[in-house]
Amino acid sequence: MMTRTRGTSRPGPTRWILYVGIVIAIAWIATQLFYFVQIGIWNYVNPQSTAFMRSDAWRLSDDRPDLSIQHTWVPYEQISRNLKRAIIASEDANFVNNNGYETDAILQAWEKNKAHGKIVAGGSTISQQLARNLFLSRQKSYIRKGQELIITWMLETLMDKERIYELYLNSVEWGNGVYGAEAAAHYYYKTSAAKLTASQSARLAVMLPRPQYFDEHRSSPYLAQRAGVIGRRMGAAELPQ
Image (cartoon, rainbow, N blue to C red):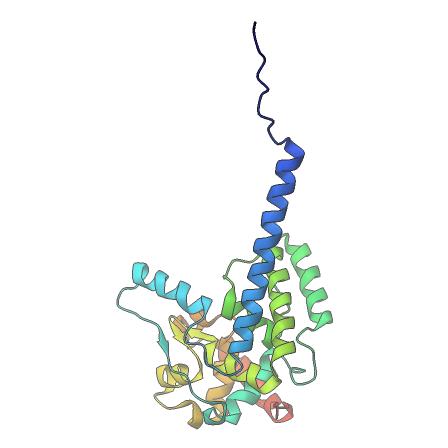
């Protein structure tokens, strides 16, 4: 007498899709929790490196082994008010009063990107730039932009404006492997961040959107012209208290 054996039932395609969706959701939530906790810690502890610094270190080890990351942390009070004013005048005039986003700037960037058929602008505030520098990659995509906005909300929720600006000033890129105000002051002017003049600060502020380019093109007419414009705007820049 023959007996039938029941075959082992296998999950159907719908169930597999559900499993994959759950795994992706859990991974996404875990990532957001990591960012949230890390930002909370950085309210009290200074970060030793950022995502941009680490990726740059790998790049330099392959492409420019003669160079290394230059970065020295300095407290907010030891950074020239000239530089603080110049960056706000150049990058985010409403930094003190906004919530980390400038809707008009984002919409303008969206229209510009549509016109070019690719991402060429982001409309990022200082807080958004910090979010990107701390955790994300240089790759431009709308997915990365979405994550940048979430991290920006975390920064604005967990930190005051002065701490956000302190982190920014100490982590922003200023040249090939040059990060933070102190390293930039030594690299370009052989001085400290505390002693930067108004004209030096204006030039450093103008370099921020394309630091590696201006590192190689320091005599650029645009750099000089734009620095003059920023120099005239600096007096109206409001600093976080």
